[in-house]
Length: 120
Image (tube, rainbow, N blue to C red; front, side):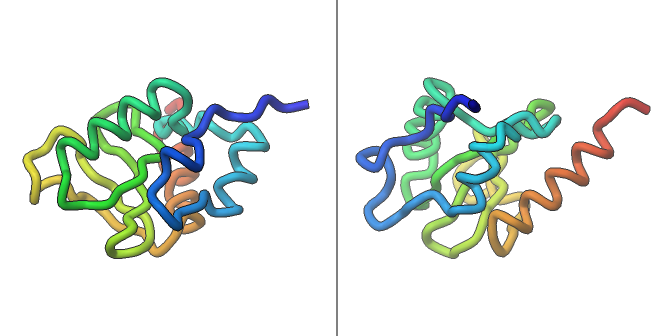
């Protein structure tokens, strides 16, 4: 039996947002360490969520993964749709790094990153 990840509760998520079924399935399967990407959970997720809201108050972002080798964070972008990769801690207006149409497109790239990041 897999342990359920400690994700944001419905009260902590923006109104009308639910985790996509594909994301929930990935987490339920325990695919949370996709080196160099890590699915955020628990206190790390809650702190990152609060920090992103404070640093980028003009954006509606829900973080779900961070890259271990830099400050990039994958977030659902509720304003523009899809997944935004932001360089957290960058000045507002300079944080956007990449965009994916949905979680599945991001996941495909995360697997490519896993292959590339692996042992040489």
